[in-house]
Image 1 (cartoon, rainbow, N blue to C red):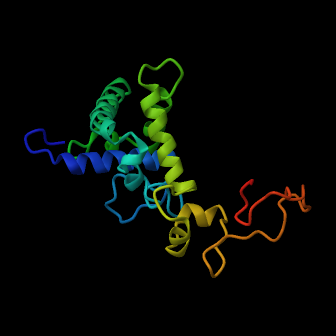
Image 2 (image 1 turned 60 degrees about the horizontal axis):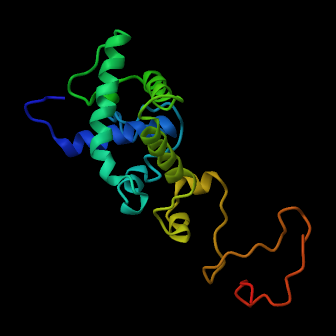
Image 3 (image 1 turned 135 degrees about the vertical axis):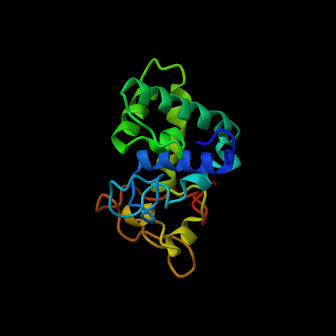
Length: 189
């Protein structure tokens, strides 16, 4: 990036999107999309709201993002030098790596024994969660809005009253009778 005039927010967004796309890849949003490598068809973690989840205070990692992003770009720069990769200077270093190089760098950062492993694994877990459970969204609304991960996983929609009911038992048979003291809400008395 141009060190004389960096746009810190743009660097942060692009870098975190590139990381999320490396964890759960998707297709490019437009031809000039550098953060998303475009190695998969359909939406991935970014389209599922990874950035929104990462910036949700309840995750407990939002304060660390301002440290992780420059660290990731520093690791990407060192990786590129080590592997003789020429990076586009108009992009954050991690974003400028090819998808395969991004994968290799993340594997290195999340490997047992790496001193920063916990931070990189946490970041990867939240990128995965954005896709497969959308914890930052109301499940019913996420399904109504077409959340790509929940739809890909085949999560059913709620009944008309907004509640989920499962008339078929998951093992094809009822496993146990309700305890006689169970309340109508399903809680033990």
